[in-house]
Image (cartoon, rainbow, N blue to C red; front, side, top):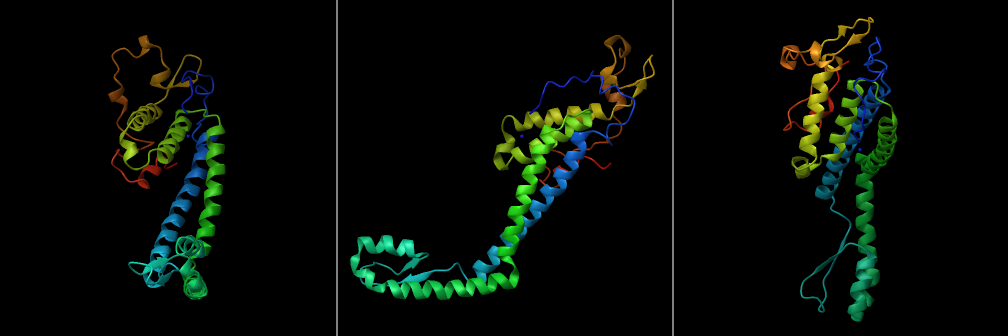
Length: 241
């Protein structure tokens, strides 16, 4: 999650058929994008359900008040209690009490969990994450045979790698600029060469493009990318084909 030395003048890039429909990298990107969106949706759902459980039931715990403690202490596990009792042996007699309180609270949590499907959602999220990892591996293993294929790889690389504040630092802004360059080249109109093969402005010799600026051919966006300030979800929509 790599930009290889792909040549835009390769024979694959010069073939007459439209590689947007057949490029293995584009097809793999579409499959990954669907899986990525599903993982994100399940992650958000799991977080919402966990917050609901924490608010309505509270994370399982026991509150231990003792003369040996300056203030009542929240005990979240038997391991925590045992570590505390190792330093304060007089608390060992309270272990059964703590066990009972933890079990009671855990039953309340489990009942509420089953009612709203929290654990089931966590399991679905884990399975979706595994599926997404499989698909992203397939995407980067696929050979891009078009600029759209290369752009698809860049899109997934940026979506997965540029997280939070890190997306403002090297190399993410630079990669986003490269992605825009690739997208711009991908939407240049194709011309017929002497041998009948379609060619983009990027594939023509310099002498054939003298006097022609890229901006002349930059009036539409067949492979649009949002600005750098766009949200994660909107950044995952570069292809409408």
